[in-house]
Length: 126
Image 1 (tube, helix red, strand yellow):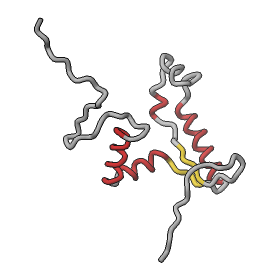
Image 2 (cartoon, rainbow, N blue to C red):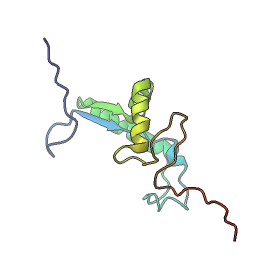
Image 3 (cartoon, helix red, strand yellow):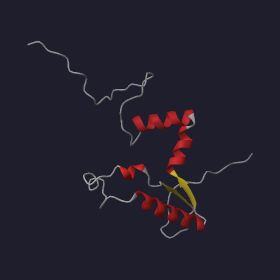
Image 4 (cartoon, rainbow, N blue to C red):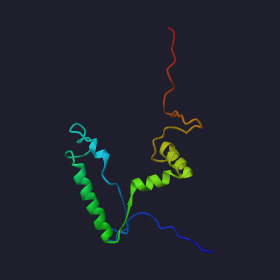
């Protein structure tokens, strides 16, 4: 019988070798920044998307050159959500799980009403 050990994710050293990193390549979300919302979103100014992508790609390549496995969040999420069971767990966790949106228990019809949402007002006659 073979027992497979799953490596734990996390960091336990500030100076140890980086083996794997998960990145998100800058994309359309940066194009949504405007002078009116960039401060609120903690940007000093509106970045150049093309330049941000070039710098990101160079950084990812530098990591690979040092034998670091580079994983992309978008690809991992796409692969995960392609599996029906994993998709169901992800959606339920996002809606009701720890740290999730707490939108109530998912119903079979796909409609929910949070237990913290007040019921609709009824019309009162005076």
